Amino acid sequence: MTRPDLALATLSLLLVTATWVNYFRRVPSGNVPARPVGSIAAQGAGLVLAALALVVAGFPPGVAVPVLAGSAALFAALFLWLLTQRATPVGDLRVAVGDRVLAFTAPRDTGAAFHTDELLGKRTLLKFFRGSW
Image 1: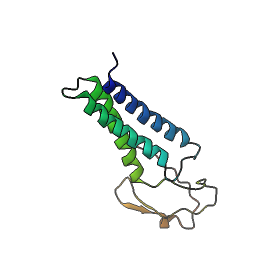
Image 2: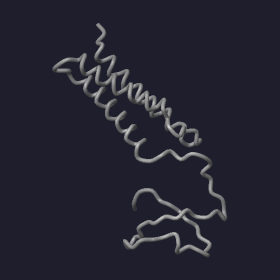
Image 3: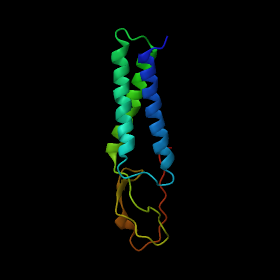
């Protein structure tokens, strides 16, 4: 006997996961659109399918449907939220020797502010680390 609630929950998680994989597969090549409308629509469809799975499941829904549908909803919401945090860079982002540094301010390890104005007239190599040590 097929369970439509379980099928909907599974489909929602598969759709959301496939969209994440497709989006991040394109990132290294710089082939991500400025406004990924298809990815946004797929994440929205995943949210709708997850909600529909919970409605069809009734009460109490068991364990599998809330876990699958909840995971899909959480990942879809996270994807949509991440897209609102920063605009996707557009254009060629390569940096060459001799290019001017864009102005920025960052905290030093001592807590004092670092400004790129301090680098004027100096040959400088900037290296950025993600995370902490």
